[in-house]
Image 1 (cartoon, rainbow, N blue to C red):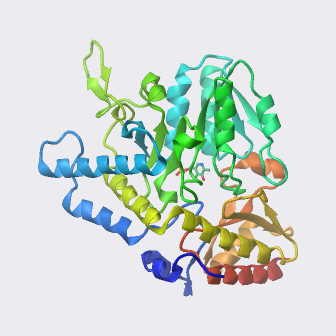
Image 2: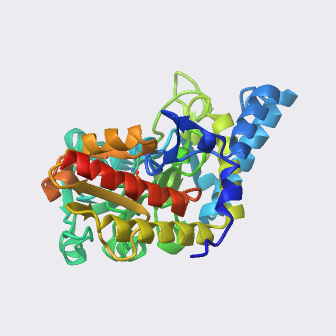
Image 3: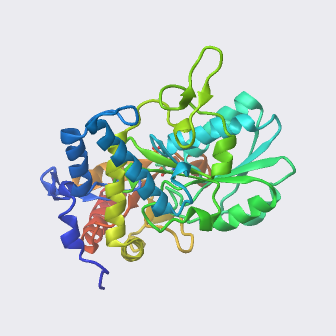
Length: 407
Ligand SMILES: *Cc1c(COP(=O)(O)O)cnc(C)c1O
C-alpha cells in the first residue's frame, strides 16, 4: 500500500518520536489526548522566549510590538484555517474546555429558566459539565441525544427533542472515544430551522479534516492547540460576531476593557472583550506554526493516511480472539476504542506501555458514554499524521501477546 506522503521523512520533524521508552522505540498512539509537536513549533516557542518575550497590546516598545504582531498574525492564521469571516471572531482561550465554559457562562447568561439545551450521549465531560453548572445556576433544562450500538447519533431522536424552548445544541464534531464523525452541518441546519444556535466541540476534528465553520453553519466552534500538533495551554473559540457582540464578558481584568471607572466600566471590542488578562501569546504564535505544518502536509493527505492506518489496524485487531471494538460508525475517524475479553483496560494499557506503546486507558472523560455501553473504560489507540504501518503491525502483534497473557 502506498502512503500519500513520505512518513519516514516527516517523522524526523518530530524530535520526540526518536525517543525510546524502557529501551524500546516509542510508538505513540495517544494522539487523541495530545499529539506531538514538530520542530517548527518548538523552534517558534524558543525564538519568542529568546527574542520577543514581552507583554502584548500595551507596550509601545519594540519587543512588545513584536509579541503583539506574532499573536495577531496567529489570530489571522486561525481565521483563514477555519474559514471564519473575521479575525474578531477568533478568541484565544486555554483550550476546548475553557472555550465551552466561555459559551456556557456568557451565552448561557442570556438564557432563562426553563430554556432547553440539547447535548449527546457521546460528549466529553468538557461539553457536559459546563452545561450542568448552568443547569444548576440558571434552571436550564438539558436533553440528551442517544447513541446506537455502532456509535451513531439517533437523528430522529435528536429532532424529537426540540421544543419551543430549545435555545442551543452543543455537540462534538468527532467523538474522542468512538471516532464517530457527527453530521454537524445537518445538525446545525436543523437547529437553525428551530431557532436554536449550535456549539461544536471540534477538539477531535480539527487535526483530522479541513474545517470550514461557515460551511458547517457552526455558531461556535471550539478546539485545542495541543491536539493539533501545537503547544499546550492555548485553544480557540470561534463565535459568530453577532452572537459574541450580544454576549457579556466571561472574565474581567486587563485587556478586556474599554475604560474602567468605579462609576461604570466599558468593554473592549471583539475579540479582546473575551480575553481578560495576559494571554499565552507565545503559545498562540506557535499554534500558527502547527497550522502551517498541517497545511504543508495537506489535510486531505493526512486524512487519507490516517484512514489507511485505521483500516489496517481494525482488520488485524479483529482477528485477535475476544477483542471488541467500540465505535463502528461508517466513515469514522482514526480512533479505536477496544477491550479484550474480560481483561481490564488498565492491565492491557500497562502491558502495551512495557512494550513501548503509548495508548489511553479509562473512561476518556466520557462516563455517560461508558455507561451507555455498560463498561467502565476502554483502551484507545488514536493515529496521527506521523504514525506508520510498521507501528500498527507491531501494535497488533503486541496486543496479541498481551491478550495471551491476560486471557
Ligand atoms: C480533549 C477533548 C476536550 C477537552 O480538551 P482540552 O484541551 O482538555 O480542553 C473536549 N472535547 C473533546 C472531544 C476532546 O477530545
